Every structure is written in structure tokens, then in C-alpha cells.
Amino acid sequence: MATDSPGIFTTDMTVDIRVIVRWPRAEREFAKYSQSDMAELTAFVKANGPEALPPLVTAPDFRLVDGYNRLTAYEAAGVTQVHVQVWSYSGDEQMFRHSILLNAKRRHLDSATLALKGADYRDSLEVEAAERANRARAEAARNQPRNADGTMGTGPTTGVVEPDKRYESSTERAAKAVGVSPATIRKVSKVRDTGDAELLEAMQDHTLSIAKAAAMAPMAPEQRHAVIQAARSDTPTIGAVAAAMHRTGPEHFIAGCVDAMQALQKGGTRTPWAELTEDEYRTCLSALGGLITEAQKWHAKAKEYHDGKADGSAG
Image (cartoon, rainbow, N blue to C red):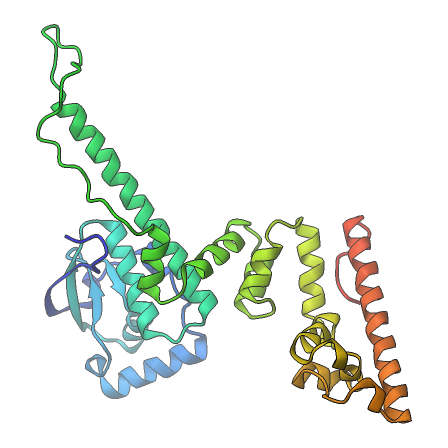
């Protein structure tokens, strides 16, 4: 069975809902519906029946691979019989990856979430590869010739089948599976591997870009916290104006601060500094002063937090 295949479809059938077994590893993979969404799905099931939704996907032992929200809605609606597709797998790792693929293809996921699932997919491939290598070593040991006294010999082994050689890395294979680049998987892995829940959340809710979050991974936790708090501020920040400078060029950067909100939303004006009116000039200086004040405030907060004198909030 090819390692990268999702498994083998064997049959579909209708079964008693009580035989379905929740598998925590797959159940944790994707977020559960909100209470309101679950109520809506349950009402739909009551009105249309379970046949109006895609079948659940299970392993031969009826461990649930895909369809946890549907199963919850079926249970709430009092459904007793459900339609399932049964797939066979080489082991738990392939079954886990199929769960990722089914959800990644069906749901509308952003690149950060897809890349995180790609990292999980890659990790599963590597676990499976390690298991194959261990089995190959064990088989080699069993086939190693023995000396007359029963000790291990040194002759050539027999009957050992070497594992398939792969010319793509596990990251490349995972990237193809979920539809993101290998570089994106490597970046989100840096973020995930910090164990910093705040940094991971900031990347997932788009407070920080994937690249920015990955670049912050080597920072001390208190430094990351200060940067994230600054990024979450409701006021136009230095970062927004820096983005404006990147889009408009340095010759228009200062003029782009004439209206801080315009700098935030549109990337600054295209009016050269020399062409500003007197009122625009004063407004620009005022905006710059506000930005400098904002930068000083965050610098002071970051220093206080680093020294253990504050909780890192903006105030």
C-alpha cells in the first residue's frame, strides 16, 4: 500500500450509530462547531435526515476518521442509523493523515491553518518512516546468520526487503498533500515548536504574518509578548506606517503620514513632501508626533515587562 495514499475504500453501509467509536487523535485535529452552528446543523438533520449530509468515514473497527460535527448533530437529533464509508489503512499514521486530507479539502482553511496541518502530516510521515526502519532492522536481525554457538554471525543477511527509497523529503510530500509550500510548513513549524500559545494564536488570527511569527520564534517569550501586544493595539502603529513606506517608497513616506488612518488603510498618499499645503504639513507633523509617542510608549512598556515591572498590557 503506497504510504502517501489515503487508504483503500472498502465498502459503504448503514450502521447503528452506537457502533461508531470516537478517536481522540482525529477528533482534536479540527475545531468543533460553535454552539449556534451546531444548533443549526442539528435542526437541518431533524428536517432533512442524515442522508442529506455526506457519509461518515471510518476504519474497519468503526473508529471515526471524519465527521465528528456530523456525529454530534446526529446524536443531538436522535438519529439511530447512519451511513458510513469504511476505509482500510496500513496503520494509525495513514488513518490520521486521511483525516487531515479530508478536512483540508472540505473546509475553507487559511494558509496558516493548512500549513499547521501540513506540519502534522509531515510528522506522521516521519513517525511511520521510523517505524518502517525499526521493522527493517528487526527483520535484518532475525535473518542474520548465527555461529555454531548461537551468537550473531557476520555474514550477509538473507530475505530482507529494504524500505522504499524516497527522493522527496517528508516536508515536500506533506506540502503537496495539503496544498501549501514546503517553506510555509517550515515556518509554521518554527512557531509551533516554540510552545508559545500566544505567538501561535497571533499567527492564526492574522495579527502576525506567518513570516513575522517565524522570525519572532528565536526571541525571548517576554519580547514576543511585547511585540504581539503592540500589534494588537487599536491605534495606527509604526508597523502600519512601515508597510506604507514599503508600498509607496521613501520619498512619499512622510507625506503618507498626513492622515494616519489613510496610511493604515491605503498605504499613504502619493503627494510628495514638497507639494503639501501648510495645513497638510502641520497635520503631517502632528501625525508623526503621535507615532513617535506611540513608539516611545511601547518601548517603555516592553522595557518594564522585560524588567518584571508590568504585565505587558498597553494601558
